[in-house]
Image (cartoon, rainbow, N blue to C red; front, side, top):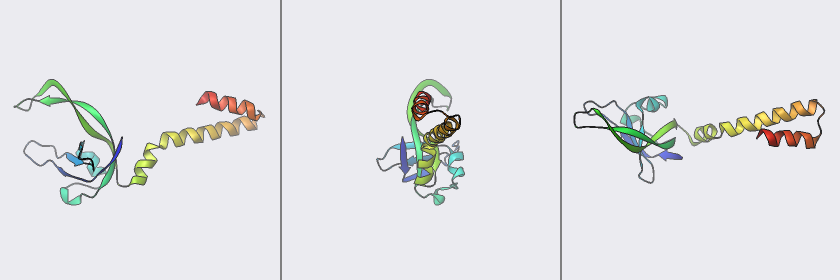
Length: 129
């Protein structure tokens, strides 16, 4: 899933690791690791400006009142990757597709050089997809 993070803040309380809680336009709460935020130049709340993320639901362990991990699992939305711009997100999301297209083009070039017919080339490309 992809989304734009439109607001949020860093955790600053005692015992907090400085991770970021972001929200999208639907009001969904999204966990984002501090290191991911740093990778796009955001280190404190004042650095915030809307950005983009690929997100997914992950299971995490809960903590008890003493802060110890329990065996109880809950699901939360979490950023898998973050991007400064929509173009960066779209390029990353489609990079495997772009790679597959380039690979097929290269295969077609090899097959043409080898003297295969268009029908043979198309048959090979359909098998490789």
